[in-house]
Image (cartoon, rainbow, N blue to C red):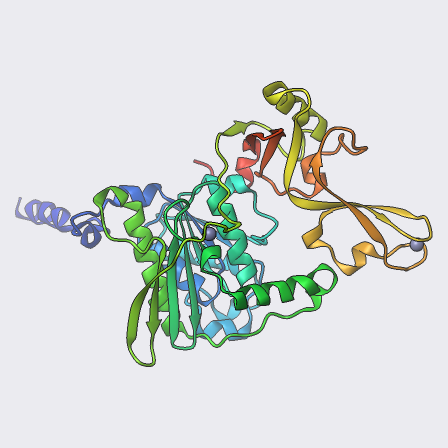
Length: 395
Ligand SMILES: [Zn+2]
Ligand SMILES: [Zn+2]
């Protein structure tokens, strides 16, 4: 009898593992459990972000990084071990997150966020966290998040210092609004060399520490928590930056000014879910649907230039079908005479093209993307919702 009593009282003593978190008055663990969070970059910052998300019991964590783990990552990455060297960061980070907390589902993708992640993915996440080391990827995330109306939280570190910023479409400055002339010069310098030689360029290395990444990732994740509890009216960093100087112990808030002529403020209204799979449905079939919606002269507007055919002085013509941004030197070498070819590009499809029987995947559009149909100034947007299972874990 007495033993039974003891057992019962022990049972009562076992607390839910999130109990200390639930003591925060506005905390709703259930929301965190239901949240789908995208993390771009699994370096020093990304590791700290993912660790925090796992500890907090975020339901679904989706991690994007194209790099493999190197020896030098081990001093700044809590999720990696020496036996992981040579493996993909995104994959190992996802595995480690699920080991830290088996309640979470985490999935790693070896995809470049600039070209290879469909907008539908951004649209179907709750929030985006960035742990990136370059402006070009930040700009791409910024534009993607704006189009589908998602908050994104950027972080950056250098030595003992760092900054965390929160951007919400329609609520103050976006990332592009904060960019200075120097930022643009650096991006354009990369882009001007980009077309043919980007593969040969190495990103400049920045000194980073596990300490500054812990501080900044902590701020980023805390901001995410507040934004997931929007209705609690907590102060957030939306449109602002938190600057931390670890050397002098200063920290302060920067208020960014929204720029009216900013090129990133493009919002997609009225996005229509379509069961289309981008490796099955043809361009012609999609154009048919769009014309039924908008009118018979409607066209498809792509959000990127696609290189279609390479043309050589020797009269050779070569199929390319790749976004211009992703072209490499080898794509433009004529296999007949070894010279570099010029090439045609396409941005708008009106049905007269000789490749409308191709799929969007064959055109170089990523899975789960959103494309625009347009008649004059009338626009409608279509999501390849049939591709959803390419990214999301089963529900
Ligand atoms: Zn802007
Ligand atoms: Zn040739």
